[in-house]
Image (cartoon, rainbow, N blue to C red; front, top):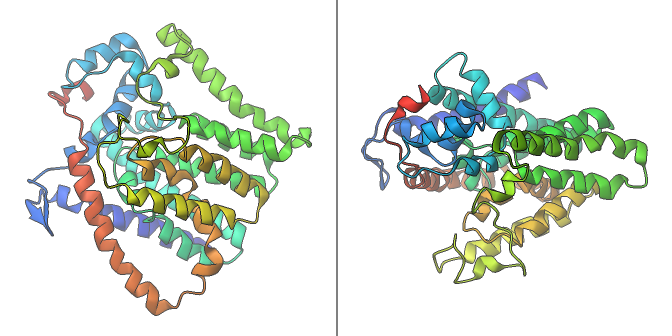
Length: 368
Protein backbone atom coordinates (compact mmCIF):
# COMPACT_ATOMS: atom_id res chain seq x y z
CA UNK A 1 0.00 0.00 0.00
CA UNK A 2 2.72 2.46 1.00
CA UNK A 3 4.75 1.68 -2.13
CA UNK A 4 1.69 2.22 -4.29
CA UNK A 5 0.98 5.59 -2.69
CA UNK A 6 4.59 6.59 -3.24
CA UNK A 7 4.38 5.49 -6.87
CA UNK A 8 1.28 7.51 -7.74
CA UNK A 9 2.62 10.56 -5.90
CA UNK A 10 5.85 10.23 -7.87
CA UNK A 11 3.96 10.00 -11.17
CA UNK A 12 2.07 13.15 -10.26
CA UNK A 13 5.20 15.08 -9.29
CA UNK A 14 7.33 13.92 -12.23
CA UNK A 15 4.62 14.83 -14.73
CA UNK A 16 4.24 18.21 -13.03
CA UNK A 17 7.99 18.74 -13.27
CA UNK A 18 7.99 17.82 -16.95
CA UNK A 19 5.13 20.24 -17.57
CA UNK A 20 6.96 23.04 -15.77
CA UNK A 21 10.33 22.29 -17.38
CA UNK A 22 9.98 24.60 -20.44
CA UNK A 23 9.08 27.46 -18.09
CA UNK A 24 11.89 26.69 -15.66
CA UNK A 25 14.37 26.61 -18.57
CA UNK A 26 12.74 29.62 -20.29
CA UNK A 27 12.52 27.69 -23.53
CA UNK A 28 12.11 29.60 -26.78
CA UNK A 29 10.42 26.89 -28.85
CA UNK A 30 9.71 23.20 -28.49
CA UNK A 31 7.73 20.76 -30.65
CA UNK A 32 5.83 23.49 -32.46
CA UNK A 33 5.04 25.46 -29.29
CA UNK A 34 6.42 29.00 -29.05
CA UNK A 35 7.17 29.50 -25.37
CA UNK A 36 8.89 32.82 -26.03
CA UNK A 37 11.23 32.18 -23.09
CA UNK A 38 8.30 32.51 -20.71
CA UNK A 39 9.25 31.76 -17.11
CA UNK A 40 7.39 30.41 -14.11
CA UNK A 41 5.55 33.71 -13.78
CA UNK A 42 3.42 32.43 -16.67
CA UNK A 43 2.30 29.51 -14.52
CA UNK A 44 1.44 31.87 -11.66
CA UNK A 45 -0.42 34.25 -13.98
CA UNK A 46 -2.66 31.53 -15.34
CA UNK A 47 -6.31 31.94 -14.48
CA UNK A 48 -7.31 31.75 -11.70
CA UNK A 49 -3.95 31.78 -9.95
CA UNK A 50 -3.67 35.52 -9.45
CA UNK A 51 -7.28 35.67 -8.27
CA UNK A 52 -6.51 33.15 -5.55
CA UNK A 53 -3.45 35.19 -4.60
CA UNK A 54 -5.68 38.24 -4.22
CA UNK A 55 -7.95 36.31 -1.86
CA UNK A 56 -4.99 34.93 0.08
CA UNK A 57 -3.58 38.44 0.44
CA UNK A 58 -6.82 40.31 1.20
CA UNK A 59 -9.11 37.66 2.63
CA UNK A 60 -12.00 39.36 0.81
CA UNK A 61 -11.35 42.78 2.36
CA UNK A 62 -12.64 45.21 -0.33
CA UNK A 63 -10.16 47.96 0.57
CA UNK A 64 -7.18 45.62 0.29
CA UNK A 65 -8.53 44.19 -2.95
CA UNK A 66 -8.78 47.66 -4.47
CA UNK A 67 -5.16 48.34 -3.55
CA UNK A 68 -4.04 45.11 -5.22
CA UNK A 69 -6.31 45.70 -8.21
CA UNK A 70 -4.36 48.83 -9.04
CA UNK A 71 -1.56 46.52 -10.24
CA UNK A 72 -3.80 44.50 -12.57
CA UNK A 73 -4.16 45.47 -16.19
CA UNK A 74 -7.64 43.94 -16.09
CA UNK A 75 -8.83 44.76 -12.59
CA UNK A 76 -12.10 43.42 -11.21
CA UNK A 77 -14.49 44.79 -8.63
CA UNK A 78 -13.80 43.48 -5.12
CA UNK A 79 -17.04 41.50 -5.13
CA UNK A 80 -15.77 39.49 -8.11
CA UNK A 81 -13.48 37.53 -5.79
CA UNK A 82 -16.44 36.13 -3.86
CA UNK A 83 -16.62 33.58 -6.68
CA UNK A 84 -13.27 32.19 -5.54
CA UNK A 85 -14.01 30.12 -2.46
CA UNK A 86 -11.53 30.19 0.44
CA UNK A 87 -10.02 26.71 0.83
CA UNK A 88 -7.35 26.92 -1.87
CA UNK A 89 -6.45 30.53 -1.00
CA UNK A 90 -6.30 29.36 2.60
CA UNK A 91 -3.71 26.75 1.67
CA UNK A 92 -1.72 29.42 -0.18
CA UNK A 93 -1.94 31.68 2.88
CA UNK A 94 -0.56 28.95 5.14
CA UNK A 95 2.32 28.21 2.77
CA UNK A 96 3.03 31.95 2.45
CA UNK A 97 4.32 31.88 6.03
CA UNK A 98 7.26 29.93 4.63
CA UNK A 99 7.77 31.51 1.19
CA UNK A 100 6.43 34.68 -0.52
CA UNK A 101 2.96 34.54 -2.06
CA UNK A 102 3.86 33.84 -5.72
CA UNK A 103 6.12 30.98 -4.64
CA UNK A 104 3.47 29.91 -2.14
CA UNK A 105 1.09 29.41 -5.04
CA UNK A 106 3.62 27.14 -6.76
CA UNK A 107 4.20 25.18 -3.56
CA UNK A 108 0.43 24.84 -3.13
CA UNK A 109 0.23 23.40 -6.63
CA UNK A 110 2.85 20.81 -5.69
CA UNK A 111 1.02 19.89 -2.49
CA UNK A 112 -2.31 19.69 -4.32
CA UNK A 113 -0.81 17.32 -6.87
CA UNK A 114 0.51 14.99 -4.19
CA UNK A 115 -2.76 14.98 -2.27
CA UNK A 116 -4.79 14.47 -5.45
CA UNK A 117 -2.74 11.43 -6.45
CA UNK A 118 -3.10 9.90 -2.98
CA UNK A 119 -6.85 10.55 -2.90
CA UNK A 120 -7.33 9.01 -6.33
CA UNK A 121 -5.50 5.84 -5.37
CA UNK A 122 -7.31 5.57 -2.02
CA UNK A 123 -10.66 5.98 -3.76
CA UNK A 124 -10.00 3.42 -6.48
CA UNK A 125 -8.39 0.91 -4.11
CA UNK A 126 -11.30 1.18 -1.68
CA UNK A 127 -13.98 0.64 -4.31
CA UNK A 128 -12.22 -1.92 -6.50
CA UNK A 129 -10.24 -3.78 -3.81
CA UNK A 130 -7.63 -4.36 -6.50
CA UNK A 131 -4.40 -2.45 -5.95
CA UNK A 132 -2.95 -3.00 -9.42
CA UNK A 133 -6.11 -1.77 -11.11
CA UNK A 134 -6.24 1.14 -8.66
CA UNK A 135 -2.73 2.17 -9.71
CA UNK A 136 -3.69 1.99 -13.38
CA UNK A 137 -6.83 4.08 -12.92
CA UNK A 138 -4.98 6.62 -10.78
CA UNK A 139 -2.33 7.15 -13.44
CA UNK A 140 -5.01 7.47 -16.12
CA UNK A 141 -6.96 9.94 -13.98
CA UNK A 142 -3.89 12.14 -13.58
CA UNK A 143 -3.82 12.69 -17.35
CA UNK A 144 -7.31 12.02 -18.65
CA UNK A 145 -9.48 13.78 -19.59
CA UNK A 146 -6.64 15.67 -21.23
CA UNK A 147 -7.59 18.93 -19.51
CA UNK A 148 -6.54 17.43 -16.17
CA UNK A 149 -2.81 17.90 -16.70
CA UNK A 150 -2.95 21.63 -17.39
CA UNK A 151 -5.48 22.20 -14.60
CA UNK A 152 -3.34 20.55 -11.95
CA UNK A 153 -0.20 22.31 -13.23
CA UNK A 154 -1.42 25.85 -12.54
CA UNK A 155 -3.07 27.69 -9.67
CA UNK A 156 -6.49 26.06 -9.79
CA UNK A 157 -8.66 24.72 -6.99
CA UNK A 158 -9.91 21.66 -8.88
CA UNK A 159 -7.27 19.28 -7.47
CA UNK A 160 -8.27 20.13 -3.89
CA UNK A 161 -11.93 19.98 -4.85
CA UNK A 162 -11.57 16.53 -6.39
CA UNK A 163 -9.55 15.45 -3.34
CA UNK A 164 -12.33 16.40 -0.92
CA UNK A 165 -15.05 14.96 -3.16
CA UNK A 166 -13.26 11.61 -3.37
CA UNK A 167 -12.40 11.64 0.33
CA UNK A 168 -16.03 12.23 1.25
CA UNK A 169 -17.30 9.50 -1.06
CA UNK A 170 -14.63 7.03 0.07
CA UNK A 171 -15.42 7.64 3.73
CA UNK A 172 -19.14 7.28 3.02
CA UNK A 173 -18.44 3.87 1.48
CA UNK A 174 -16.54 3.00 4.65
CA UNK A 175 -19.60 4.18 6.64
CA UNK A 176 -17.59 6.88 8.42
CA UNK A 177 -20.32 9.42 7.87
CA UNK A 178 -19.19 12.22 10.17
CA UNK A 179 -15.70 12.35 8.69
CA UNK A 180 -17.24 12.03 5.25
CA UNK A 181 -19.42 15.04 6.03
CA UNK A 182 -16.40 17.08 7.13
CA UNK A 183 -14.66 16.27 3.84
CA UNK A 184 -17.85 17.22 2.02
CA UNK A 185 -17.98 20.54 3.87
CA UNK A 186 -14.39 21.22 2.82
CA UNK A 187 -15.39 20.46 -0.77
CA UNK A 188 -18.17 23.04 -0.49
CA UNK A 189 -15.68 25.62 0.79
CA UNK A 190 -13.40 24.87 -2.16
CA UNK A 191 -15.87 25.16 -5.03
CA UNK A 192 -19.57 25.97 -5.05
CA UNK A 193 -20.61 22.79 -6.96
CA UNK A 194 -19.57 20.87 -3.85
CA UNK A 195 -23.10 21.41 -2.58
CA UNK A 196 -24.23 18.93 -5.24
CA UNK A 197 -22.60 16.24 -3.12
CA UNK A 198 -25.03 17.13 -0.34
CA UNK A 199 -27.90 16.80 -2.81
CA UNK A 200 -26.65 13.30 -3.66
CA UNK A 201 -26.36 12.29 -0.01
CA UNK A 202 -29.85 13.63 0.66
CA UNK A 203 -31.23 11.59 -2.21
CA UNK A 204 -29.50 8.43 -0.97
CA UNK A 205 -30.10 8.79 2.77
CA UNK A 206 -33.34 10.74 3.18
CA UNK A 207 -34.94 7.66 4.72
CA UNK A 208 -32.00 7.27 7.11
CA UNK A 209 -31.95 10.52 9.11
CA UNK A 210 -29.19 9.34 11.46
CA UNK A 211 -26.88 8.91 8.47
CA UNK A 212 -28.02 12.11 6.77
CA UNK A 213 -27.65 14.25 9.90
CA UNK A 214 -23.83 14.72 9.70
CA UNK A 215 -24.10 15.90 6.11
CA UNK A 216 -25.97 18.99 7.26
CA UNK A 217 -22.44 20.29 7.88
CA UNK A 218 -22.23 20.89 4.13
CA UNK A 219 -25.03 23.45 3.73
CA UNK A 220 -23.99 24.85 7.12
CA UNK A 221 -20.49 25.46 5.73
CA UNK A 222 -21.93 27.25 2.71
CA UNK A 223 -24.22 29.31 4.93
CA UNK A 224 -21.26 30.20 7.14
CA UNK A 225 -19.29 31.37 4.12
CA UNK A 226 -22.19 33.55 2.98
CA UNK A 227 -22.40 35.06 6.47
CA UNK A 228 -18.69 35.83 6.22
CA UNK A 229 -19.28 37.45 2.83
CA UNK A 230 -21.97 39.53 4.48
CA UNK A 231 -19.42 40.81 6.97
CA UNK A 232 -16.78 41.53 4.33
CA UNK A 233 -18.90 42.78 1.44
CA UNK A 234 -22.04 43.82 3.31
CA UNK A 235 -23.74 41.38 0.98
CA UNK A 236 -24.26 37.75 2.06
CA UNK A 237 -25.21 36.90 -1.53
CA UNK A 238 -21.99 38.34 -2.91
CA UNK A 239 -21.25 35.08 -4.71
CA UNK A 240 -24.33 35.52 -6.87
CA UNK A 241 -23.43 39.15 -7.54
CA UNK A 242 -19.80 38.46 -8.42
CA UNK A 243 -20.25 38.86 -12.16
CA UNK A 244 -20.24 36.49 -15.10
CA UNK A 245 -19.22 33.41 -13.12
CA UNK A 246 -22.35 31.29 -13.36
CA UNK A 247 -22.56 29.53 -16.70
CA UNK A 248 -25.72 27.46 -16.22
CA UNK A 249 -28.42 27.99 -18.82
CA UNK A 250 -31.74 26.40 -19.69
CA UNK A 251 -32.68 24.60 -21.86
CA UNK A 252 -29.70 22.22 -21.94
CA UNK A 253 -27.00 22.23 -24.62
CA UNK A 254 -26.74 26.02 -24.86
CA UNK A 255 -23.04 25.35 -25.27
CA UNK A 256 -23.86 24.90 -28.97
CA UNK A 257 -25.46 28.33 -29.23
CA UNK A 258 -23.87 30.85 -31.59
CA UNK A 259 -24.78 33.66 -29.18
CA UNK A 260 -23.12 32.42 -25.99
CA UNK A 261 -20.57 34.73 -24.34
CA UNK A 262 -17.92 32.16 -23.45
CA UNK A 263 -18.01 30.25 -26.74
CA UNK A 264 -16.61 31.78 -29.89
CA UNK A 265 -15.66 28.93 -32.19
CA UNK A 266 -17.47 26.58 -34.55
CA UNK A 267 -15.47 23.43 -33.83
CA UNK A 268 -17.30 21.83 -30.92
CA UNK A 269 -17.43 18.17 -31.86
CA UNK A 270 -15.22 17.30 -28.87
CA UNK A 271 -18.07 18.34 -26.56
CA UNK A 272 -20.16 15.44 -27.87
CA UNK A 273 -17.34 13.05 -27.00
CA UNK A 274 -17.18 14.45 -23.46
CA UNK A 275 -20.91 13.88 -23.03
CA UNK A 276 -20.44 10.35 -24.32
CA UNK A 277 -17.48 9.61 -22.03
CA UNK A 278 -19.26 10.79 -18.92
CA UNK A 279 -22.67 9.42 -19.84
CA UNK A 280 -21.49 5.87 -20.45
CA UNK A 281 -18.94 5.80 -17.63
CA UNK A 282 -21.35 7.08 -14.99
CA UNK A 283 -24.14 4.77 -16.12
CA UNK A 284 -21.82 1.79 -15.61
CA UNK A 285 -21.25 2.59 -11.92
CA UNK A 286 -22.68 0.06 -9.48
CA UNK A 287 -22.44 1.88 -6.15
CA UNK A 288 -25.64 3.87 -5.55
CA UNK A 289 -24.02 6.87 -3.85
CA UNK A 290 -21.29 7.22 -6.46
CA UNK A 291 -23.75 6.87 -9.31
CA UNK A 292 -26.22 9.32 -7.78
CA UNK A 293 -23.61 12.03 -7.30
CA UNK A 294 -22.08 11.38 -10.70
CA UNK A 295 -25.41 11.66 -12.50
CA UNK A 296 -26.50 14.76 -10.56
CA UNK A 297 -23.21 16.51 -11.28
CA UNK A 298 -23.21 15.19 -14.83
CA UNK A 299 -26.68 16.61 -15.43
CA UNK A 300 -25.37 20.08 -14.60
CA UNK A 301 -22.76 19.70 -17.34
CA UNK A 302 -25.62 19.66 -19.84
CA UNK A 303 -26.60 23.14 -18.62
CA UNK A 304 -23.11 24.65 -18.81
CA UNK A 305 -22.49 27.03 -21.70
CA UNK A 306 -18.73 27.50 -21.49
CA UNK A 307 -16.09 26.34 -23.96
CA UNK A 308 -13.95 24.90 -21.18
CA UNK A 309 -16.45 22.14 -20.45
CA UNK A 310 -13.54 19.73 -20.07
CA UNK A 311 -12.48 21.55 -16.92
CA UNK A 312 -15.98 21.64 -15.45
CA UNK A 313 -16.31 17.89 -15.86
CA UNK A 314 -13.07 16.95 -14.11
CA UNK A 315 -14.56 16.43 -10.61
CA UNK A 316 -16.54 13.42 -11.85
CA UNK A 317 -13.89 12.10 -14.25
CA UNK A 318 -12.61 9.58 -11.64
CA UNK A 319 -16.17 8.28 -11.24
CA UNK A 320 -16.57 7.85 -14.98
CA UNK A 321 -13.21 6.07 -15.19
CA UNK A 322 -14.34 3.78 -12.38
CA UNK A 323 -17.32 2.82 -14.51
CA UNK A 324 -14.96 1.75 -17.28
CA UNK A 325 -12.71 -0.20 -14.87
CA UNK A 326 -13.88 -3.69 -15.94
CA UNK A 327 -13.12 -2.83 -19.56
CA UNK A 328 -9.81 -1.11 -18.84
CA UNK A 329 -8.59 -4.08 -16.81
CA UNK A 330 -8.84 -6.29 -19.91
CA UNK A 331 -6.64 -4.14 -22.14
CA UNK A 332 -3.30 -5.90 -22.84
CA UNK A 333 -0.08 -4.28 -21.64
CA UNK A 334 1.15 -3.84 -25.22
CA UNK A 335 -1.87 -1.72 -26.02
CA UNK A 336 -1.19 0.55 -23.04
CA UNK A 337 2.30 1.24 -24.40
CA UNK A 338 0.65 2.55 -27.56
CA UNK A 339 -1.90 4.58 -25.60
CA UNK A 340 0.99 6.17 -23.68
CA UNK A 341 1.90 8.00 -26.89
CA UNK A 342 -1.12 10.20 -26.19
CA UNK A 343 0.88 11.79 -23.38
CA UNK A 344 2.69 13.81 -26.04
CA UNK A 345 -0.41 15.63 -27.35
CA UNK A 346 -1.72 15.95 -23.78
CA UNK A 347 1.41 17.89 -22.80
CA UNK A 348 1.31 19.93 -26.01
CA UNK A 349 -2.35 20.75 -25.41
CA UNK A 350 -1.58 21.87 -21.87
CA UNK A 351 1.40 24.01 -22.82
CA UNK A 352 -0.38 25.94 -25.54
CA UNK A 353 -3.35 26.48 -23.24
CA UNK A 354 -1.27 27.78 -20.34
CA UNK A 355 0.64 30.14 -22.63
CA UNK A 356 -2.61 31.66 -23.85
CA UNK A 357 -4.56 31.78 -20.60
CA UNK A 358 -2.63 34.36 -18.60
CA UNK A 359 -3.89 37.30 -16.59
CA UNK A 360 -1.76 40.43 -17.14
CA UNK A 361 -0.25 42.22 -14.16
CA UNK A 362 1.88 45.36 -14.12
CA UNK A 363 3.57 45.08 -10.73
CA UNK A 364 4.28 41.93 -8.73
CA UNK A 365 4.99 44.07 -5.69
CA UNK A 366 1.33 43.78 -4.71
CA UNK A 367 1.97 40.17 -3.72
CA UNK A 368 5.33 40.59 -2.03
